[in-house]
Image 1 (cartoon, one colour):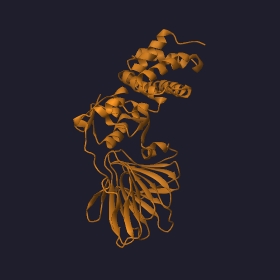
Image 2: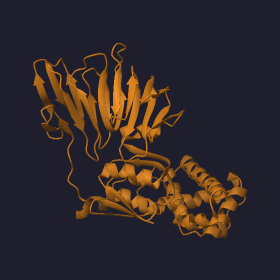
Image 3: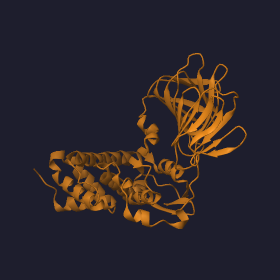
Image 4: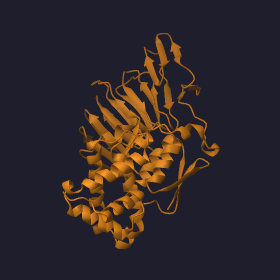
Amino acid sequence: MERMNSDVNNLLQKYLNGTITEPEGEELFAWLKEHAPEEQEGIETILKANYDSSFKEAKQIGEDASERIRTKLMQSVDALENETTQTPVVSIRRRWTRYAAAAAVLLLLAGGSWWLMNRKDATEQAIVKTEEKKEKKDVMLTLASGEQVSLDHRQGSVMKRDEFNVINDSGSLSYLGKTPVVEYHTLTTPAGKQYNLQLPDGTEVWLNATSSVTFPTAFTGNERKVYVSGEAYFIVKANQQQPFVVDINKKALIEVLGTEFNVNAYTNEPEVQATLLSGKIRVKIDKEAVELLPGDQARINNEKLELKKNVNTDLYVAWRKGVFIFDHASVAEVLRQMARWYDLEVVYDGVPPGVKFSGTINRESSLDVAVDVLNKMGLKVRVEAGKIRVAH
């Protein structure tokens, strides 16, 4: 079995360090393309050494993880090769080192599912920069009177009228019983927090960070209608006689009988997305409408409605599991999601870098750790005065 010679060994090490040049990278990728997996035994040794030295607290990676890392490396080879055939050479040269650095970190973390974002760094708790320290905002319930109730500081009964009771219990708000008066309430989440809501009909709603849902304390009439801004996940209680309707920023409607779906309607996203996990829904804007089956996604961009079939639904509901999942996501997409969670404004000093990211990030990680990972990916990121600045 052929082993890697010292020249290829050195090239791979440069690739992992993010210091490889374009000619060197072409030489390395050409070698990888020309040699079968069984001829690349030396790769595993180098990857393991880099993984263990970079993440000393991590467990040693096993054979399965090593294979996943090597597969990611080969995917990077294919991705760069495809990109080269479609992009001017000058542009490729400008992005080469940064692309290599980003891919290198992805390789190192592939076996540990972005372990760095999950680890508890001792220095993380000891050092907190004053300019990055923000006052935590509360999850708020706004009543019909305009009174605002902090759900972070009030547990148990929030409102009680006869047999009607609103109960707040450790991250979940429930509307129980029959209300003598129908009025509208609004649940709002700040950056960095999520919340669960059980509506009066038994429908469950999960709100992502910086989102809100407005709803009645009882559903009357021939439909159950709520208003959503930001991102929410619904498990709708079936009721054929009273369809469930979601108004998205007063721009689109989702009609439901009984189903599970996710709505992403943040105002700073380029499009509104409704992703169906089970059941059936209809998405409407003006006189246009599309019906979704499980795995489908409706997208609204510039007042145009598009149906996307068989999407990877895990990407769109990962937030409910406390993680970010990216699959060839742009820098802008990654930073928009992280900015909402960490309550930051994104500022680009120049044109956003053109690299793509894939991986899973734990939302419980501190801002310091998140920024550290972005910098290890080849970005130049710093946080100051509530802003995350990205240098070109």
